[in-house]
Image 1 (tube, one colour):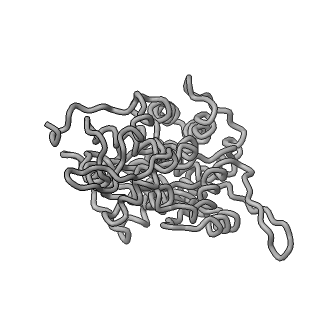
Image 2 (image 1 turned 180 degrees about the vertical axis):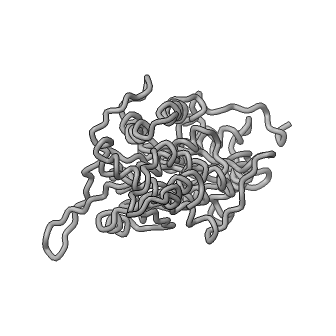
Length: 382
């Protein structure tokens, strides 16, 4: 392993003294520094706070049983090609027994956690939380929601016997930015975006770079294990205003930072303020809330509109995920599924000289809130 950790360990090998020697104790702050540097080499994070949060999240997975709760790590974006998958790949190397899954079932996830206790990193969760997920992912969502807290179990019958499987464990996921509010409240949320001008990262080659990441992860595991009792008995002070569920999910990360020392206690508390309380961290909306807000943005001052027109405008909406999430053939069905809980259903509307399936403004408008942005008259209405 290279870097400062490798240099510290190499010092013993250079010692001329005979006999076996224990490797030097590597301070926690140095291990976190190395993990942070590894992450930043290959992924462009939206802020220093986000990078610090992911670093300590990976470290906490090595002693997840020391904590009352393990926060979910949600790496989200409204646009594809934003680095979500790369962050999960890197986090898998730095975490305890990291494994990346794409579309696990609820029973499979229960078995994985109860038997192996890995860190599970689920990619493309828009298939789970979007309308495509439907009822097929209901049991998976239940595990993701309840399993963040120590002692969470799922009951089942096995050969006539009653069995309780533990579902508490470290789980992260990445996907396009649709997240149920119940899960958002249990998560440290990182909002990725495509790299802008001047933002560069190194190319990542798994055969070349994965061993380095795995080595840093192993060093993190050894250090965290050595302080696990301290972590289990810690009562870290939290920033003012961080309370209830936010306090529950950030306590483990701040405890890791305090154990590491250096400038990590101050940095992770600053990250907590920015990500949990900061005005830049807008609340993650449910799919239905997001579509209502975006419909208000694209509706303009029109009356009733055909479904095809609404979808065309949603696809063109800058920063929105709908084009990436909805194939054209299924878009009308996806839109209808998101609006159905509000009792808004497609009806026949006038489109010039003909009629088409669409939506009445009078049905949708009552669900718009003051927080939804009302744009100036769009270009296509000028």
